[in-house]
Image 1 (tube, rainbow, N blue to C red):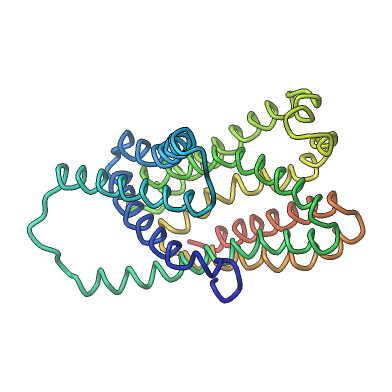
Image 2 (cartoon, rainbow, N blue to C red):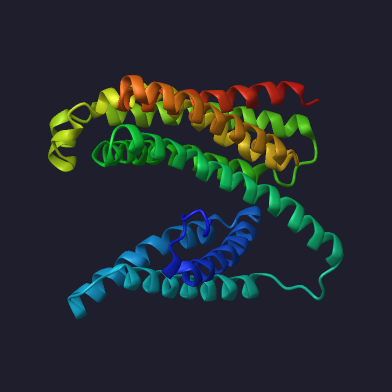
Length: 304
C-alpha cells in the first residue's frame, strides 16, 4: 500500500502504529461480541469517533490551529486510551491460567488473518478503481460528487453491517449447519427490509435540503442514488453472506466474490463512465455489487 501511494510517505509510521492499535482493540471487541457483551462492544465502537471529534474541538478552541499531523496524533491518542480501557475491561471480565494449543492458534490466526486481509485489500482496490476511472474521465469535481453519493450509500449500509454483527454473535457457537442457515435467512430478510426502509427515508428528504447542505452540484442526487440502488440492496444482502461464509470457514468464497466485483467494476466502469458520465459510474457500481451477490447465491447453493 505504501509503494502504491495509498499511504503517504510522511505518514507511514503513524499508519503502522494506528493499524496495530486498532487491531488490538478490534480483537478485544470481538471477544466481547462473541460473549454477547453488546454494551461494551458498542461503547468501544462508538467512543472512538466521538472522542476523536471531542479532542479536535478542544484542540482548536485551546490553540486556534489545526492540521493533518495534529489530526493523526489525536487519533493515535484516542486509540491508546480506548486500548487501555478495553484491556482493563478484558482483564476484569476474563481470567485464564494458560494458553493452550498455542501452535494451532498461531497457525490458524495467520491462515484466517491472511484471507481476511486479502479480502480487505480487494475491497479497497474495488472502491479506488471506480474513483480512479471517474477522475480520469470526468475530473476531480465530479469525483467529489460521486464520493458524497458513496458516503450516503455507506450510511445506508451501516444497518446491514449492524445486522451482520448480530448474526455473527448469534451463530458463532452453533455447530449445526441447518441452524446457522435458518438464522442467516432471518438476518437476510431483516437486512433487506431495514435497508429498504432507510432508502425510503433518504428519498423522502426534499431535494432542496440536499442542495442547501451539499451545493448546487447535487440537484440530481436522487437520480444518482436511483442508479446506485440495485448495488445498495445487493451489498446489504452480501454483507450477511460475508459473515456467513466466515462463520462456516469458507472465507475464500468472499475473496472470489470480491474479485468478481473488482473485475466487473474495472470493465464496466471504464465503458459506462466514458459513455454516460457519473450516471454510468453509478450503474457500474451497481453491476459490481450485484455480480458479487450473484456469486454468493451460487456458492451458497453449492454448500451442502
